[in-house]
Length: 376
Image (cartoon, rainbow, N blue to C red; front, side, top):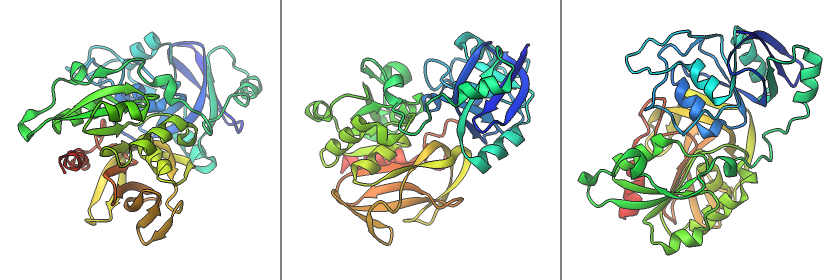
């Protein structure tokens, strides 16, 4: 191990030890409160361009394996932890976090006060940062951190989407036919997690994954039963092709949006999005379903949100160019909007991750609700 330096754009610095690759990296510093699930975090395309700090002190204890990645490779720009395990203690483990980061050329830093780092991000907000094993001068690294682009106005979905379409069954197996007819859905990949394909298949939905810039007219012409707008990285307002696709799909086929897909749907409905101070990233966000009053514990990964005041409203019902939209789910920690149900066209969306990989399974009913939209 060699020394490593992490510097935030406000000048705050942390000295630790490197693990994984050596070198230098830059990105937006964010924190994740999950006590488990580091392999899914590392491989989630939504973390593209971000240096992720884990608040739980020990990471890597149970190693990594070939079944749990959410994409084909490590996606984070960097990884910051209090302590990285030196050995894997699980019968499922085939590798370690150190191995995965090293092979991916991604820098990790350990031995830093992640509590102090998290408090700084909560106080000042998510900010640009750099990690280096080459430059141990704070002023020098800070200067280059401040030269990096921020996440605002960043269109990153195009950099993580698939180049060519493929059938989800080739990755997760066939859709469950025991539930009745199998529905065919176009899965628009803005940074898709594999676990979403698994949950769609378990709900009797056969996915065809298509690139982010696929024209909506092409999908409509192919006769899909529905369209799924996936999670992904970057600023939703900068992902203009995604907004245009969502707008064109509304009223033509049933739509389900998750995370970035939820934000794109909100913009397509004539609403607004905004960058949150430090976002929601973790496994324990309480969300209330306004229709039932039920509180779900949910898995999150987002730094932008749909503005609940982006439309004229009567209570929790917004008036949009596509008719009435029920603002259906609310975060109980900060009151932000977490879900929408269109009342005059078949479309639903949630800000959080109902596939919950990692996380609790309280929200998996949403895949069945999407199936019912298509059945109707």
